[in-house]
Length: 251
Image (tube, rainbow, N blue to C red; front, side, top):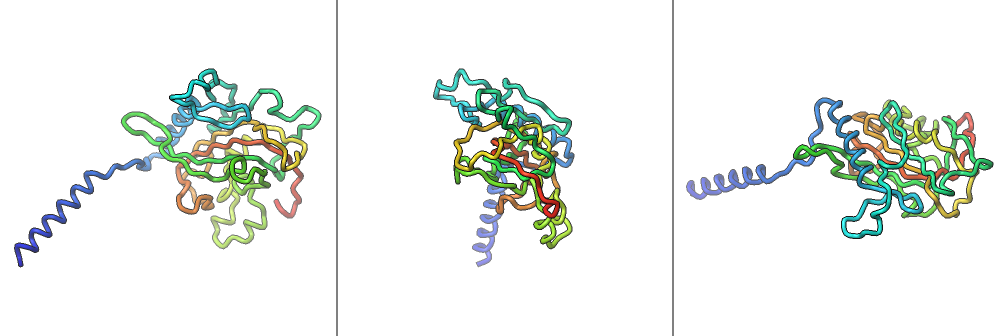
């Protein structure tokens, strides 16, 4: 009986050891947040080298087997601006991709925005000396899902009523919901003069937000209920269908 017990114990220890050896750690949070910031910047530039914009302004990955995209310009080859926060924005310049001068609307800090938008979060890390995004999380996608624009996503603006209804101190803060880098960059664009919601889209551009200008390592609203957005960068592909002044009671 004692020998049987010893054999079982030895087997279980061997299994545990083998399991531990086989496990591959895909992401380990750097202790120094500056290292994560560096990962983000490198991964964003890599992303810009591997993707382009199609005829409607959608972000598309270059194909390794289809030659039809061989003449497309990489995102990194398009005119882009980098803000002091590290946020990069690309404004499309093709015909019809921006509001006509007689219809464009300036986007102000507290505006109510109607957006056709695809928002994805990406986690950057280093593996074998190479830095890249290793996972992605969909946050919102009106382009491929509903086909209709959305009004005031909370990552753009958290209304007073939402903050007042919160039950924790963190959730009463706008920073718990809003992606600061997106709010900063969206004001560089112009809104259309309230396009009908069923209008065909022609996306205006891209905003790439490193994690330090998103939620970094702070508490945040669970946009994806299964996973944390801690250390995640965010990429927005969008068109601003319209803007309105926000009532004082909602600010």
